[in-house]
Image (tube, rainbow, N blue to C red; front, top):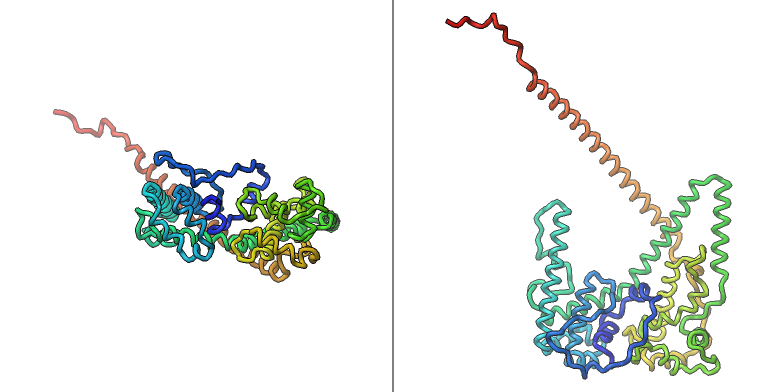
Length: 413
């Protein structure tokens, strides 16, 4: 049986790709499967185990809630039998009423800690913005992953909000990531153009030639197999698994790459299959290869295969889904894969708009700089006036009285 943490991470919050990018080069031993439902956890030793980072700003709170819910056998069993749609509709959250008292007590404590953390952040923002009065309750409402009307106890509504918020945020992650990459590529091109403006004619010619040479070097790589195709999986079977391509068996392949043995290939396990393809195009030691672009290519490959294979859209590939995909014509006779250099991240119009925005931002900054300079000069002028007035006052205060002459004093009788 899959653990509660794995089920919630895979089904409810869909395993954030940030984790894949940050932990990809780490090598871990495959854990021995243990049926956690047969283990008793002493109440006094209820400690949250370490879990993966989703990249959400409320990640720690999310992980700790899930980790403690895993301690409850009833909740774990319900989760195992709940599908993705029921989780999204809040049916799983209602099972919170049946978890053990010690787990509920710990969840109450976690919620109070999270509310205090948010209040501290709001207070810090208030201090930065000059100490203006702020409506704490209204500001807390913007954090939609908990019920702020009751800051003391963790209820069904809190779990429902947490699952829905995490699911929504992580489903938008890929879209946001693509937008960030587009901006990265446009900024890189903008900087290159700005650099060229500062060169003389001969230097520009040399720089353009060097740029074209790098582009050609990067494009000169072995054929990239279509992600998820028979050719691509057979190459993994041969190069990574050390097996004869002629003996390729989809069911055996699935079991080999379901590394945690839970019966599904999740997003991390899927992205691991693309390493050989990415190594054909990218090397951290070569000037022409951009590792940020490599991660974008990995994301594109994973998205493509998920769209083709994950028929129930739970962001997991079951054995049945995998075997079904291997029977399709596209598996054996795929189209060629269009790599990043063949599929530009932005259009000419988007680049033009981006540069106009940068120019406007630069103009605004220059205007602000002029205003600040004027304010500085005015303050310096006022300071000079104050210093002059201070000097005059000091001169008057410390000016000695004229000497008193003895002969002018009246005689004593």
